[in-house]
Image (cartoon, rainbow, N blue to C red; front, side, top):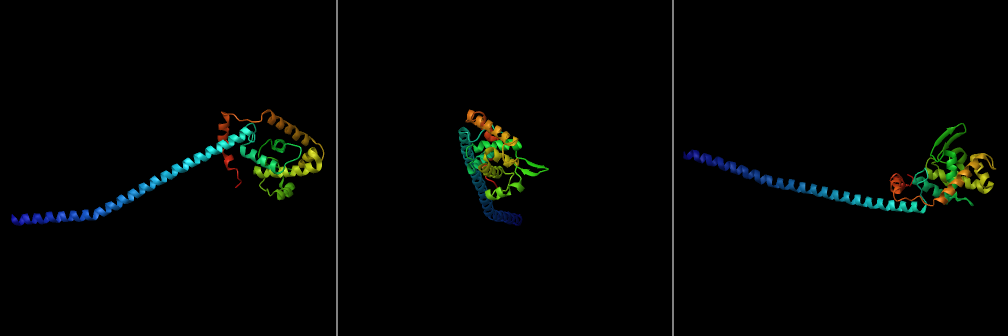
Length: 238
């Protein structure tokens, strides 16, 4: 009986020793796991804080951009009564300011030319006469000199298209007068033509429209229109 008890005690001691060894080995492991888990949670919290900060910053920027666009609409620089987006309107203003034509509202005249050429659409047209690009229906073959002088070659990009058109029309008008210059732009001679009369008709309509309605700002509809023109905040050509 004593021998059996001693054997049992030895077995108990062995088990306890084994458990102590396991516990001894596991404590550092648990510490490592706990540390790594805490580190991961810390990383997650840090990432979440960065995400919230970025979201807040983006929201602030978007708010500032919206206010800036509202200001441009209130001033009449951007309008909601034209069938073209804000970015394109901005491109036309830039072209008109870069190559102003004496005696006329160059912005309205460029709109009139685009209205006559493509009904204010950014098109690529191929016909028997050649290939024509963009709002102002420009032929690269015929306009290569103007493209070189303006440094504008992407005729499907509104900024380049309107600058080439503005420079060409300005050059022709300075030599042939307004109607003659418009006819020359279209290749219809250097005097009054059906083309020049059509362009001037649209021009007068735009001028009247801008005079009668200096601004199209509306507290209700402007916000919706701004949302539909989100690309305007990134107008730089890539």
